[in-house]
Image 1 (cartoon, rainbow, N blue to C red):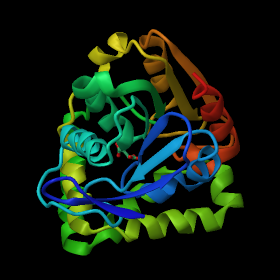
Image 2: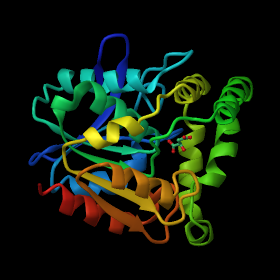
Image 3: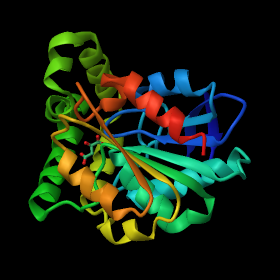
Length: 264
Ligand code: MLT
């Protein structure tokens, strides 16, 4: 794990693998880069994996207030600059990481070789959803990160994961509770004002792969199918025995799909 100065803060980043395309992994909310551990371990033989903790999460720097998806995309571009990564990257985003991915595409498309979107959404929050996020931000600042974990954890997994993988559930709970209240609240405020990304989808003129857990209740199969249909060259993988965190619930299927895709 390295700490990289990107200007106003330091980002923690894990890098594995020597050969192949750079694969930039943007984690979801309220997680950290270790949600990608199965992908980091498996894909390091196929590409150069770059897995940062996003601003406000893990062991990266925290800025209170509002951290927009655009700002996190700017952070990732600055991180690539600091790491002297000049090759185009395969951007792989999970949920909030996907929201950041749309903004990365909008601002830095010349740096993108391909996009992998896992369990994410292109539509913005409804006013009610945005309001709920702001309330959760306030509660988290008052009561600590476990307040956010209490709301988010129940939405993360397929039924079989709850039954068969209690240790995974506990690992994700600990990951959520290990983040700072200020970082969680700032990302909630940022997600609440994220723009509609649907207009970007027809213009994505690089290969894309859309991955969704068959039991995802946040970014549903139907909603992700619409994303895949709107992107001109998008592959599609529906992952069985997986909910919103397909990347850890059924990593074998996800890893094989990504490994095949990144041979492009
Ligand atoms: C995530 O996994 O990043 C979150 O579920 C995103 C969200 O709350 O919209």
